[in-house]
Image 1 (cartoon, rainbow, N blue to C red):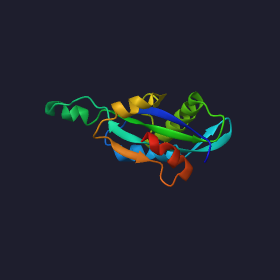
Image 2: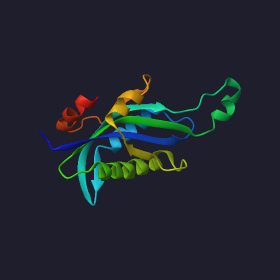
Image 3: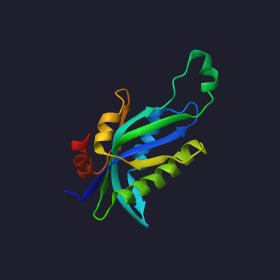
Image 4: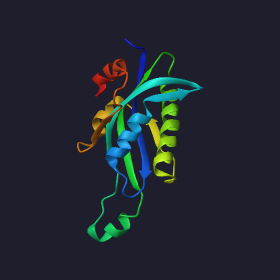
Length: 151
């Protein structure tokens, strides 16, 4: 079995109008495939659910809402391969990777994405029922296996 660290995460950011939620989730999952720390790379696996955090919009507000940024979130778990990782270090690595990927895909959308380590219980309790499942496709099998009990 591969040595790994499991970190429950909350990732959130603004996205431009018309952004696809599934596309955002795919971007997060694939960005997390390989992370960098102090010049060394390590494999990772991200699994979770993405959802919109929009405010309720009345029909008369719709034209303005169609041009505003949308607030998206992801709650899930990241498995980081190898020894010596800390939750804070993994979160910093994910934050750097996700910030670069979001900027490359969507351009400047305001504040950089926020990435937080949270409690496992919060992932289970706070993930909306309507959220879309995402994961890193074709990830290292041992990382998928290590993460499965948390899903």
